[in-house]
Image (cartoon, rainbow, N blue to C red; front, side):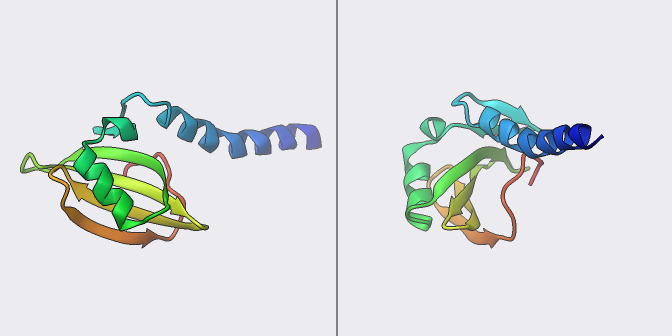
Length: 110
């Protein structure tokens, strides 16, 4: 019985990691109507703005979103020294907002 419980525990621990690795495979993926994209697929001006907003941060996930007024923006879920950040940048490279997230990013919709 303990062995089965350990297997379940390991499965519960590994599933989120496997899902995050899938989302970071370099291809675009659909996620609840939003498009998860690789850093290479983000316009250069957007990537530069995000990097300047939190220098040294590691981008865990980048989501391309479309507002109701057809404005495209990008949400960067970032990790830096044990803290998690959300960086929002418009497609034209203008910074929308940066804030600290209370927890690590998940694959659920923001």
